Image (cartoon, rainbow, N blue to C red):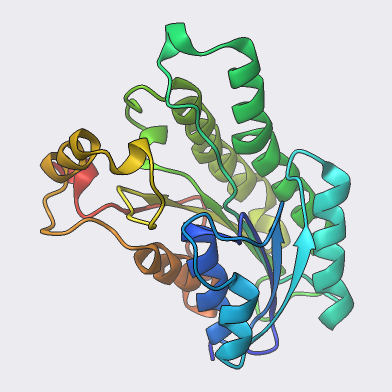
Length: 256
């Protein structure tokens, strides 16, 4: 129960990695606000709320478009109403277009940047705004964990806007960590490698899986729980002297 009596907001919490993060934080005692456009998991199965409550955890779903500051502020408000504070903000929501530069339209670019870059900017801004006004617990007023990607540091094959958006997340994480360390705000990122979330489409096409396996030294590809465990560590008191880091959860992809 490393997060007992803590509150957390997780964006993109309905599916995949976001669902696993929300379930893991709730299992460790946090009250989790599930911020997403809807509750239906892309991969099918039980909703995040059903999974958490079945495990004895507590949560609340809040419809949230991360490109709208008022939606993020309202989601944080649900957490604050619970305990008077926001302890953990996880900016996870992201989209891609599966297109290279020349096939990426301006509309594609604007849509991805609205979620992957602006959405993280707004999530961080609204979280910091709340955290600055609350008393520290130990040394820390609050923790932000952004979900980046190895494709924020190396090219994202045929997903130009996605890669640029994730590179923005890596930079923002370091900037915010440095700017607000003196105020007791911790800000880190987790960079997943190839994670099998159960969704269909190009992400699990045979050629894409073969590419990912060829790049990953570990003998399996990632699971959403691998990312969730890393987020939990950075969200816990065990990580108080770690800030501005981009923690790879990639089975050695970036090491090879």
